[in-house]
Image (tube, rainbow over all chains, first blue to last red; front, top):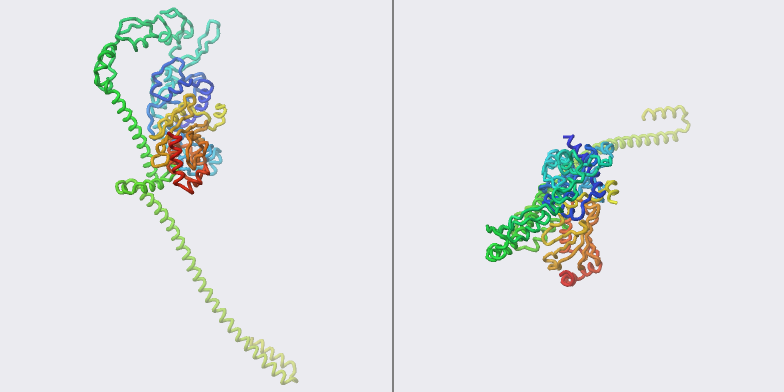
Length: 466
Length: 159
């Protein structure tokens, strides 16, 4: 599976190259660009010079821009929220959102910075691989492989659709198709010209053969000088002698004016314009304009039908929009996150507003709105509860500390008590000694003639007492 | 020029497929809002927003211009009112004071959501974060009169 990821990486690098080539002048003219807007039209338009895929480099270096692909149908959930196209090399964030790798990395360079574009959660990311490894950054990582597999299996049209290729296939096989099998991929013509130089003109694969397709020859019908590449276009649009017989009036017209003739030939058989509403009538245009359209009920009702159809389409569009909005809201509820979906007000406020504007219908719409509100209140209470629980445990800890301190306090008090007792006993002893000394001194005064050795003996007694 | 931008890495002109995907998304936004791309510049849109019901702008059709810059969607689209409007967050030149158009832009926001936000701004003016100071003053000091003026302007300019 790594091989696929690598290949996608490579394709992505090539994407830039292709982009350059678009800028270098292969960009289709404005009209083409407009036609790209309606993908369903692309396959119809077939012109030899339409934009498409060219192989100018060697086979290995053929760049394919996956972002220019036209998809047959796109499931909304497989679109990258940034480029709005199906994921190319999807990466998922730690907050659970998925983007194309290039898209999310470009977002990090944009003013938003290293935040998820959907919920603005900070994401750790650095371009420096070594630094990322050191700091163990893994806030964005490749999405589950099944997602790549699903997006790679999406059906796409050939890049050469505007040149007439009708191919439709899974995205993973587009490269193989363009390089190996598409008849409309252009290669440089390798045949030598008369003057010895290589022809070199970009030519679609279907014209490449043993002879140089750019060699001029005379048109079999009108004698103009044409070549193999231009032959088809010439016969259809230019040749004045490529006749085609009209089924209605049995006259012959050159191919280039035939379509024009068909649209006004009076004899040709056409169907009633009310056929889409159920009219089975079929006949020549003459009869249609003069008789049938005047009496056909379906034609008369067609104005009304059209009105109804546009109304139905409008409603279908609105329904689709509401559906997608509901699904985003449900998504955000199941993920436990309410985003404000780009509204300037928080969702809570919007709901409050609805309620205050419409108090009478409160009970009718009790279910959904109130469910959401209750869910949110419940969430709020839960976080509050968690906060309180942590506070309580902190209190418990504090209490233990306080009892420990109190115990220590009692011990210290005891010791203090002992100390005071010891101190008081010492005080008593000192007082006793002082008393003794005073007595001795008075004795000394009484008997002044007493010899000094006696005094020493009394001091010896004093020390003994101590 | 765009080629150089491409090489330097940060966005630059997106490929046509991508641009057309965005354009297709902008073209069919929401009931009450239309956006039509200019014929000669697909990045430039003519937008109309119906004044939301229940607001002083009810019944008005407001014209705006919207431009997707080269760096879109990495940078916000540029939006401006072309129709004159009496609103505390929209100035005389039509510039709009809306967080998602400035600092709070995210590449995952779409033109559709931006236009919806503008419509929501019409139904809930915010005079505490004004762009047109005089209008905001009036809105705070004498709301009834301000709403009356807004209705008059809607009738005069946005019909």
